[in-house]
Image 1 (tube, one colour):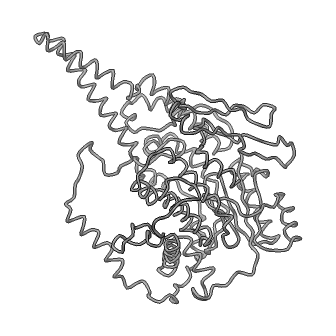
Image 2: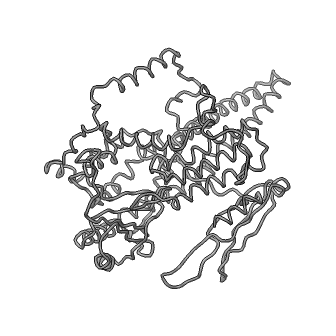
Length: 546
């Protein structure tokens, strides 16, 4: 694969822009060994881009073949898909929206309480879309038309200033234009999500001296604090467990008055959720949807714990559960998932779920996988853009990062960049690509050397080729400007700094979940005496399906 990528870089080829790009090959297996891969692609050079700058490739249906047909289009614009729905607070000024929402919400929907709410919100969303198009009017379409009509009327008034009826029409249209422009400003302000922008262009400006004093006072309060221990061995005490009374209080039913108070106090200008409805919508229509929302509140999470043991991680539609590798824990996971399915109406897709082990013998693994009915997976896997591994990171596992850097440089090959321009791209773009990995892992020295080799080759040649003359040693280049270099940071030094920051978070009583877990579960004997846990741990990754 690396040879193929080197060939693409050598020929200055890159992928053509695509529409609804999908995995283009499958083995069409009807058993559990079903595989999807991206094998087919459209590669073009700089000459093609210059001749057809707006071209793109579209992936068609696979039908009965193993491969997906690719069709290249040369039209001027990529087709735009539908825009996501977003509720705008300015709509509430038109009282007819209340009748529209009430009529849609009162539609009969059968199913579980949570299912009824989600379906009714979809009905409300579609009703508001129609209402916005037919009654309120799309502001982005309406405002240019009103502006042109107002300009025509004002020109007629200037030509015939004694016509009172014409002047009256111009004044009325001017008021309507101001109202429409205010609606547009309110919508743009809500899209921008700027909390400081409250009255159009009436900004609040602080004197420069106040800003400087604020910076000095903030960092002085941190650096001069006596709360942080200067000794690395002074590890804070583990976080205390919840008392029985606190655990019972957290598990008690939520009262309607408490929910009403929270809804009333929520900020209506905050960003909307995935469904497009923001806090102002629920504040305005809580009288209508509050009763059904309280019924659906019966779903309770089964993973509440009194101590600081991480039991699960959630990101988008991925859920990872952690437990000891024994039959009792496996039975507990099955019970929790069954309760979740009974409450929410969602079931775990076993075909997309896997069990991962960091230890244990094969007989134990086989017993647990059979108990769960889920196959065993193989680490590493990619989670939140990083490889999830049970051991030290290897150079082979860093190849996705190196490939990403090579592709980014390949996209710049057709640009005539100066030496200063390439330096700026290295400092601002390439360094940001590996910063996410650098902050999380101890990168292998071989991977650090390869990344720096790619950067210095691009600096001197402007390409991704492996052969290049380097007039100045990289050690000199990475020195500060005062020392004769150009200020590029060494990747090894940056990696060490990130590791020291993680150590600082542990010692400085950082309140993040990770720092608390390390202090409680790993660093009981001090930073210098970390011991590898002897007990096996397993992880389960599941995907819910409706």
